[in-house]
Image (cartoon, rainbow, N blue to C red; front, side):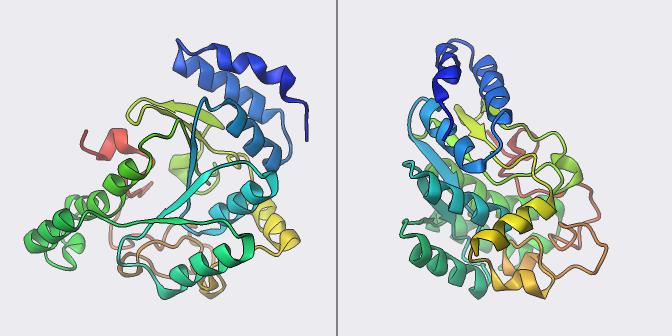
Length: 256
């Protein structure tokens, strides 16, 4: 574990959150091991740190690193009510493997009932706006509730996951949520990610072996063909680049 004394200055920028984040990002970039990055995040986030996991390959690697680092992180997942059984099995396998609890956050029941009454059970296929409305109720609003009280938010975003994620920083201040957002494996390639998973025998979703590199809700995810983009199987009926659910690009898609 590195000596974090060299990074103590990152806590002094409380008056300029963006600058604070940029200093943290530079400090994280100097560290080679993801476990050390997690420890630095926990030490300098300025308060409680939460990790949102979708149980995908990236998030499973981060989960493992959190376990190894031994830091106190609130781990949660968003149960949209439309997940694959294999995703739910991965929650159980992860809890058993690491002994760390995963908070399961469900959509607000009244909001969900109103959405289904208005758009129908599969109304998300009617239009892009309808799909984003579904994601808002099932993912974005639950995320907001789950992050209440957190000062830092850890994700498993990587720059080469999709065209829209090429500029993902190690750290940034999320003005909408009012917290620091951390992406400790932002610079990892897919090969590095897969090697880390194999090396540490990390439990993964069984669907990955069946052609599902990116896994979301069951009605909105299909397997991809060889050579297709890693996120081509998400909302495949939409002819759009950089398709997102709104969790990581709320400035474009989420109502304030």
